[in-house]
Structure formats: structure tokens, C-alpha cells
Image 1 (spheres, rainbow, N blue to C red):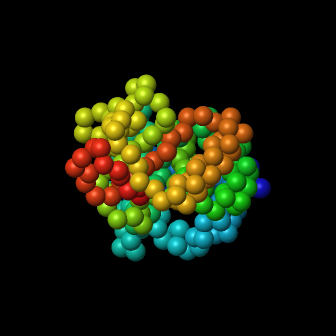
Image 2 (image 1 turned 60 degrees about the horizontal axis):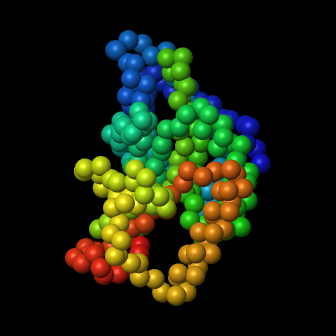
Length: 243
């Protein structure tokens, strides 16, 4: 796996993409930005992963990340940058199929080190519940480098969901904050059950076990299960169909 290679391009300092990145760096005061460098890491490995494992062609991915023909990447980035917890940033592609999230330098290096194992696991487990990694990038300006990775948006092809839970299997500090759309472990009523067909239940448990063993082999433990439920549930004692 070619995980150490990187492709590099220089962005025009006055481009919309550079202006959007200014919000990430928080440094722009109206003066010259100087050189703005964009890097893609392990490009051939990521292309193999997208096309051979996830079934996404290069043109489709580039179109999704670049946005509409009228605005291109500049419009897509400028309109969709949002600040997350801990000072990080994320943005959705123009068609909503991908989510880009910032990461630290240490997380970036760890991700590239785990990339060969991740590729083998995803190739052998086409129904894996793990997030689908589609790219790893950085942008350098003002003498600083920010890293981010791109994931497939699991909600892109689903109908609107009434509820969404982020479950870690722990009740310690696992309440959603007021106004937060995604609920957590302690927000799930104890009397509420999931409704799964026997075959679906068995398949889910098998796949979750395989993915958990893979993460354990990588010495990773901070992960969760994203669960969605369609339609309102009026009685918490009722079962909930899973999305």
C-alpha cells in the first residue's frame, strides 16, 4: 500500500477555497495570504479503496467534492464550513454524500499507519459497519498545516430519520446537551426495545463482532454505534424499528 506518498497542488491565494480555509485558520485580516498548498495523502491507495471496495468512480467523487459547475469547490467550501466541538471544523460536500472532518497531526499520522489494515478489513468485510474513509488531506497557509479526512455520509441515501443515537455502551457522561439532535446512551429509555428480524439480528451481531475485533487489533477503543430510527415513537415501551 502506497501510504507514504502525497500529491501537492498550490491554490490561488485569492480563491474562494482559500477564503473558506481562512475561517478554519482564523487568521485572515485582509492582507496577503501568501502560498496556499493543498496535499492529498496516499492518493493511489485511496483511489483503490473508493473504486474497488466502495464502488465509487474517480469522476463521481471529484464531482461530489467540487460542488456545482457554477461555483465549483470554492462555493462548496465557503458555504458549508462549520465549527464543531473542540475547535475542529467539518463540512459536507455539495451533494451531501461526503463529510470532511478536521483532525490533529497525531491523528493524521495514526490514520495513515492504520490504512493498510483498514483497506484489508474493508475489502474482506463489504458489509462492515465502520465509517467509509474516502480521502486524507491537508492544507497549508500562514505557515501552518491543518489536516482533515473525508468520510461517506451514512445518511445520504436514507429517508429522513425521526431519531438518532450515538451509542458507546457506557452511561458515564452520556447525555445529549440541550438542542443536540443526536442522543446518547443515557437518553435511551430502559423500557425501550429494538425490533429486528432474527436473521438481521444475527447478521448485525456477527458484523459488529468482526469490526470490534478489528478495532481491538488496532488498539482502538474510542468508537460508537450510530443508530437511527424512522418515524415517531409515542410510547417508549414499544419496540423501535432500526434504520
